[in-house]
Amino acid sequence: MKISEAIDETLRALIERVLKNDPEGTARVIERAGPEAYEQVASLATEASAYVALHLAKRWPLGTDLKTIADSTASAIPGVPVTAKDVHTFLARSVFGDEPVANVFKDNEEGPFIPVYALASLLISFKSPKDRGWNAWLDVIEDAIEQARQIPDAVLPAAAYRHQKK
Image 1 (cartoon, one colour):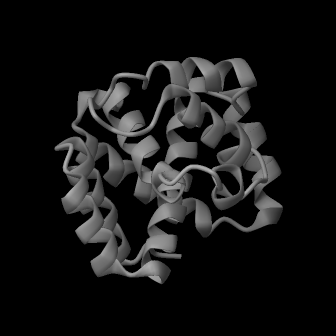
Image 2 (image 1 turned 135 degrees about the horizontal axis):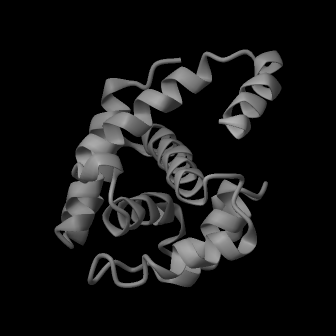
């Protein structure tokens, strides 16, 4: 399934605002997108965060992998209202766990925005393959997500085995 151009553009606009430490601009982009579109943006940010973590761990990440990854994002973007603990919680409980972000961060007013903040922090904290900028790396990630969405579930065990044996 192809990623909607509008969702991709909204995600990139949000990451730009986050990187510029522009909370008002971030709020405007979210407001323009609307709740339904933002939910899709947050879902895409979650999938992209999973890609980065899997890429870094080179396997299904263990708790220690997720903590190391999250700790590396701690000061990636000054002024961003997300901590390394938030990133770790997001990765462990929502991305690689089965808890919805809304439940995990229900007492945190920034909760709904943590997927975008976390992805921005991950993209900035870790160099992309071939040391491309975050925008080019997000292109690679989104291409991989689109391709993975087309793989039938019956093929996944064989693909995982093949990947592990390389």
